[in-house]
Each structure stands twice: as structure tokens, then as C-alpha cells.
Length: 180
Image (cartoon, rainbow, N blue to C red; front, side, top):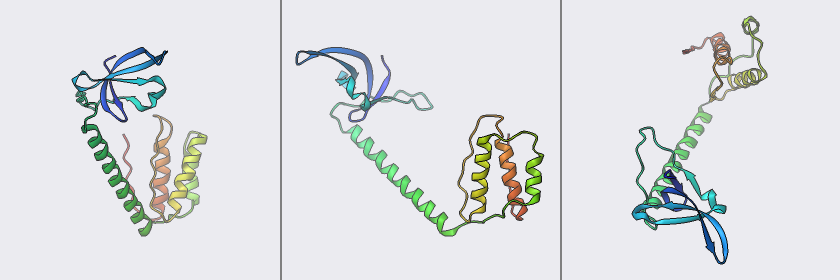
């Protein structure tokens, strides 16, 4: 109770709990939401897909409540849709540009590459082997690499980065490795 919520059609409101109401002779449960000027909205529980908890921004500022039937929420949704469309167009333009210009296709593994990889002390996990194969496939193609490697601390991300860096250096290209 008291949490900020977002209703797809009505915007930001406050959750006030569940209410049982008699509708056409049958008892039904509703989520009670309040909006600006203490306007109330009863959302049937079977329509919970229209409501989600508001995610507070980094500064923790409380959002303004929307007005039921007002235009503020519709304007906000329209602005967000426009921004998302612009972002998608920019991404499409960027990926098309990358595709047109191409990149460097690095050489297949050399004996030195294999020697480096065998010198690492730990046995690779199946996920590391998969990620390494994907990275090498990216590096050996003429398309610019666009990959983010994620994993928990201590699971060999830096080791994979060093292998990729070594592969690039062998083809006389520059590499910078930054690690904490």
C-alpha cells in the first residue's frame, strides 16, 4: 500500500490495496489505485497485466500523480514512443553503416595462439569455450565485432579478452586492454 504504480492507459498512481466489490451480484476482487485529486480506479485482478510497479529513479524523487482522464500520460507515452522510434532509426543507421564499411578479418589461430591458450592454468568451462568460439568467429569475419562478454567475478572474462587481444596483435594491429 502506498507504492507508486504505472497503469498502461492511465499513468502513474498510488496502489491502495485490494478491494472486494459486488459486481452484478457476484463478488470480485479489484486493485484500488488513486490518482491526482484522489480519483479512484478499480482494476479487476484479471487485468493486472495493465499495471506494474513504478521504478524509482536514481535520485529517489517521488513522481507526480497523473490525472485520470487527463492528457499528461498520453503526451508522455507519445514522447517516449517518438524517442524509441528515433533511437531505433539511429541504431539501424549505425548497423547499416558498419555493414557497408566492413572491418578487418583476422587470421585463423596460429601455433603461437594455441601455445598461449595452453599456457593458461585453468581448464576452460563449457561457457568459456562457447564464448571464445563466438569471439574468434567474430574476429575472423570481415564484419566489425559487436559483442559484450558478461559473467561473474573470477569466471575468466579477462582471460578470454587476452586471447582475443593476442589474436589481433599477431596481425600487427593495436590493442588496449583495461582491467580493474
